Length: 569
Image (cartoon, rainbow, N blue to C red; front, side):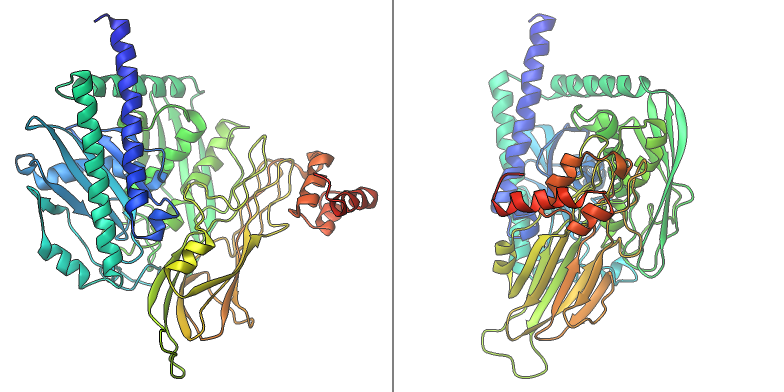
């Protein structure tokens, strides 16, 4: 076969591998029990060569899972031992430091054999609603309080499920059927990936993946280095402050663009926190790499070689390199602010490329519902754990407005109200865009949301808050204004904290205003037509249109008249 034909064949195989892992991910979505996986897409899937190097990832999934999982398979190989990796095995862990950052993520790795020869691995990760312990939240003082720990071990050995492990898991979690269902879904999606891979190898007459692996990794490495080396070398520092748990947290990075690499050094960042918002280095690395790839090489496929030139270092015992046994349940709160910190530095080196700051971390909360305790609960009242994924607004981009109620950098989907209310005795009374929450600018920041949530009649609940941006809203870039901050209270005005488990009595609701993304560029430069459009859509109020954007009374009246007639904006 000529070199040209070989290249074409390998490109076809590469595309085929991507479709294989996407089918793997979709199988997980379709079979998972947890709403966090089934509805929000909080998962990842990928295929690896026998050395544990990631060759392809599914499009469905989150950067934190995918990029952290890129390092995980090597840990599995080391812990299990190559001599113990056998056909019919499936391996499991939720180790925060050798998996994807906290105990609520279960990572499953399956070796793939063809004709009794190991040809690669499939791996997948899913966020489960409950793993025992204190429950999903920031309240723990060590990882030992945060749930059941599963070291890297065999879930299935030679085709035989470890029933003892399953009994231990069932005895230590609040939602045993749901969790065991998710574990089997993870194992099944890897099996589907394995079948599709071996089908492909037989179709193309491959005995192993060495040729296609070299093609993928060599081309990805070369393309990434070309992008990096086309940049002007330089250094810049980025810094931001976020709420933290009890005291503010400073995130700081020195970004160095060098020959063949970009280094993100987080020296100067705050130390380990007493509560569960700490971030293992693997998760910090995942989001720092993701931020740089988005800005510099977005179209180059994500794999071991395209990630390697983005180096991340951080002092041990900093909040972005928290060692065992630091509490890490809400590692996403700090991890999701890593990209904005990196972008604050990168904007100095590559102006006009990166967006303004956005809401950053997901605006999640978990509701632990139970029968009311102040009086006799009605028959049929029950306990349930309900996790809700929500998003504030993303930051405005240099040439486009920010996205409303859209997660960046996480990329998970907002969960439908119907799915949430089906999962337990919870009612979402209100869910709508929050007008005026997007920071003003030449490009407007994305809007946050209003939400009002309670339990059904006869129930009370603990509300585990996982919010930030209460005291430190998203900052604008290049003259843009800040986004609106997070607000949280009960419907009777009782104040609530942005983080931590808090009791909500029977009959009360939690009222939320989720944060907006910041604006980009001076507000005076925003086109009048864009201001009118935002007013017509309800994204901004009449007061903001006039006082912030300078829209005249005549223009406001014109928009009102057109809206009353139902004319398109």
